[in-house]
Image (cartoon, rainbow over all chains, first blue to last red; front, side):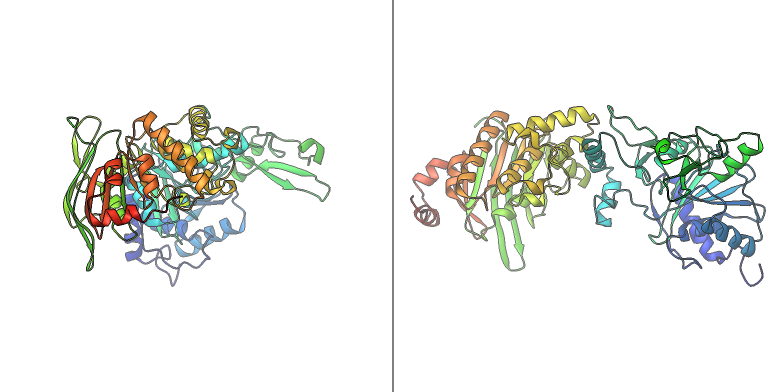
Length: 290
Length: 258
């Protein structure tokens, strides 16, 4: 960690981010502006998440970084190495061991605990952005809790497809008050946010916003009374560990339409394999997949 | 009249720089009544509408609105959330250009249902039923409930806007040239529709128009404006058949007789 302050950011910046975090925790789901810094990675790669992580990281913490559930993808590996070098903290791929988990677009399958913090990377913090282009107006809508237009979007989906077709970044209502974008996690993960024992922090670097969900907070996915929220997953079992309840990635294995469905959470999959669970291990042909 | 007014304005004045847009305007509107504001372009009609509906603040004067519980509210002193809630529920606004009010990328049903959803209705089936019912009431084929407004004609768009506005059964609707820009046969049909809906639902309307024929057909009472001043006011037939003020006489005599 020579040549860098602990966890890369200078202490004044961390202090500013912690102030924003405190405010965010005090008002669950409310977007707090903060002075986002240039980070040594491109926008869209987690500049918001990495600043939040840097601000809450302590020397005794154990860090886990996942990207779409996987510990071994470029984004996850580089951020993990970044903090190993600039903060000298222990890193892990085991969800159980981690005290801070920075994530891009997934929540681990394993239930999180009270002594853990999960940091989300957020590309677009404003859930109303697709309906109302003006930020001044969306802020007013948040202030007055005018969220009827969001239901218009759900109405359109049901009208067109027979069900709500938002598969990721499914808008949620936090603590019965603020509409919040849960970052592009699959709708499958939305129920995990409800009453989660761990602290959830969200950082959007390019949009310069921080928001948070304190532990044990009510988080509801928007729905209609006669079209309740429901999650979807591929109907297959994991080809490696046989899990039938985890979120699956579809991996194309050849140019003949063969594909494999495997857990997107690599740690969950490896743990299950170590416990003796096995899947078919074989790709499935095009017909079987459809 | 012994009944209490729904909306009352006293001494409204507003200047845009040196231009007087409103000069000491008084207005009263009773429940279920249609009040037409007529005058030439630039006479302050639309400004008056915007001030009455709380969208613009006047330099001086006061506007009172009486809610269903018979409490009086000063429209310009109301907190913004209350005024916005009023605009979403008890009040409606029909624009000259329906594209200003409609969501063009949302189906007709979604457009009609938006005010219901904003009012907290969370039952898809009921919202859709109400939307279909309202499309039928404004004479749009209910089979087009899932079509995009961009596939609708100008007259249909205007009727869709009216359905969207009336779905929450407002008590007071502000209309700004609702028939402007439509051809004459479509205008006639739309006027007929507005007249029957307003009478059946007992809605009070402030109608801004430059077209005396529209005022004659829809309005119970009429206000004639010139350079921000109300020059004449009274029952529609009385004012149009026996205009007293020189400007009103000019207006009435300048209408082409077909």
